[in-house]
Amino acid sequence: MIITLKRKATKQEEKKVVDKIKKLGYIPHISKGVDITIIGMVGEFAEKYKETFESMEEVDHISEIEKPYKLASREFKTENTVIKLPYGIEIGGTKVPVIAGPCAIESKSVLLETAKIVKAAGGTILRGGAFKPRSSPYSFQGLGERGLKYMKEVGEKLQMPTISEAMSVEEVPLVSKYCDIVQIGARNVQNYDLLKACGKQKKPVLLKRGMATTIKEWLLSAEYILAQGNYNVMLCERGIRTFETATRFTLDLNAIPVVKKLTHLPVVLDPSHGIGIREHVPSMAKACLAVGADAIAIEIHPRPEEALSDGAQSLLPAQYNKLMEELKVLAKALGREI
Ligand code: PEP
Ligand code: MN
Image (cartoon, rainbow, N blue to C red):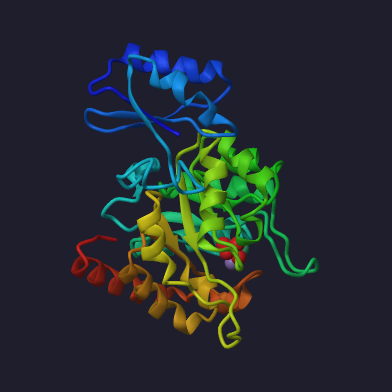
């Protein structure tokens, strides 16, 4: 339920309500407007305490959130969430940062070489996996912590926030220690222990949609992270599985306006995994921008033929450079900026 404090409630009045929520064993989720503060109290049997809060003089009224996902819903927070990253980068504002880099961190030198290409053309966030969810157990599984160390070093050198995937609860503190965003991959979107672990740490989380996840399930997964008190969650559409086999997945562009209406969380789009074919990634990246992406995630490799993972969908540097120029022009026309 949502507890709306009376207008212009003081810090002390707010604290009284917050303390009461904590005393009852719930986490208070505070959302502040100009004069109005609302506090979400969610969890099993929360509604039982409706009258307790209604009778507090600091409280104006209590309302219910209709949607099954509460903190992720626009009912809880109407304004878009803007996620602040190091070096002044934001996700969810007018600027649309491009997140780019190799699928996997392969070596320090290749990562640095790639990051320089990414940055030179205007990409601002560096991506790369150290723990890789490969379909085959015989494929390259990633460099693990050593890769994360390279990521940190290269990110700091080039002043770029970094993102990398955690596949298990144990990997969350590692990714969180070395990187600026923790990525949860498509295959783990409903790994609830993993989501809870992401909610308990402080770094922003990028939650990929699973290849067979409905929008409602995806938002409920985001709710798992938010419910632990980490509000810096962004969603990432990366393609769903349909009957079509000519492309790797089907990038569900329909989902974007729908999701944006339902949630205040920023939405990132990943055309690389979505289509899986290098030649067609630029077309889809432009579509992502047009449909309202808050950031675009792209795989790029200096020599995709040598890539240890996802070479077929990784852009060549020249393709990436051209795409970035096109995205800049398109963003302007859309009232946004790369
Ligand atoms: C990735 O970003 O490299 C990745 C493995 O993505 P997904 O989880 O969307 O397959
Ligand atoms: Mn990949």
